[in-house]
Length: 181
Image (cartoon, rainbow, N blue to C red; front, side, top):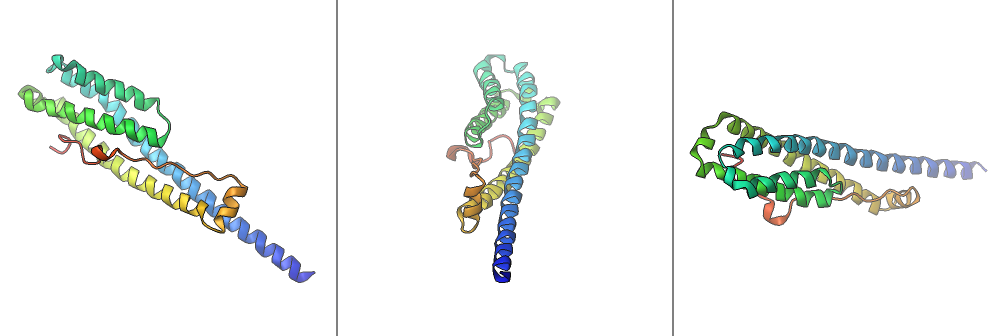
């Protein structure tokens, strides 16, 4: 009876170890997503300020400004990391178009509030890039774990589901122009 008890105890302990490992990895993904969410909220808070700043100088650029505002609203209503990545890529492109306006409006180029908003957005983009890398690394580790034996057995038993990556679209993977100038 003792060998059976030892074997049962060993199996239970290993099961607990693998379960706790998956919980830790899942929590790491959730914490990494929270970091992305904070940076996106910072970006979203800056968009209306940027639009107001540019409106005074480039009122006839209404379509560009409205596109940024509409994309911000769509981003706020999107929960899926994959879909949000697409919307955020479009928002980055819209912000690039707004920053390109400064070349056509020299007064805008000299406006201190515009320049400060530009600096803040550069900072947010840098933090967001780091948060994306950390999140996607956490997702990679978690998804790999739930697909590997013996973690797979625990993952299926306790319904650990895979996580989505947060990626920019291929054409928007470079830094938006104007954000670094």
